[in-house]
Length: 100
Length: 182
Image (cartoon, rainbow over all chains, first blue to last red):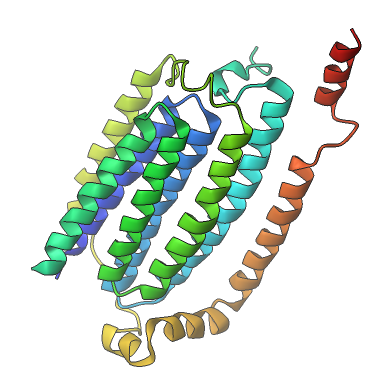
């Protein structure tokens, strides 16, 4: 039997990896990928807690998070394509038109 | 004992592939690393007796979302992407922030207390099977969120179509045409 804390530590580390990727990479697609990592960390936490709390709510929530992640990927990557068409780049530090 | 070894293997693979995904130079390699990560995540769901979610993880995440990422990566030019610097200028601030966040999150874990138990003990889930248990909850207690999720997917379909469509009024295309005319 695996203790709950193992899952939560793993989820924390994975979430931090996602945050690190989001804050450090220049490529907007890799940034979206880091968001997926963070969502997966939360999903793991939810499923683990739902298992140890003997409740279904966390797993239902995970199901909805996967739905929203799919929608987010579709919209976000659509924006990335539009951005690439208009600026010929996917690097976030070159998209600085709004910078004062 | 076997499940603990399996958990450790999955944890090491998840952390390793996660780190590789955010550091590798070629974005396609990053996406493939995340693919490996998602498979091990599905393995962890199996250790938690969530078979349906493990299947959904592989079908939706590995099968649909990552394929979408790969398609978009092939639409943008990768040749120059692998040559230029991959991190933003102030990357070390992000790394310090992420490290601090990891330490803080793990540090507050010992103060965590489990709440009240729900009404789906493992024996009951195994009796009706996991998929049926999830379906029963979803179509009774969570029927409104379920329909809202359908609406969100509809918005995503329409939004994806509108965003990716090439229309004549696109200012970017007009500049292209002007450049061609010159």
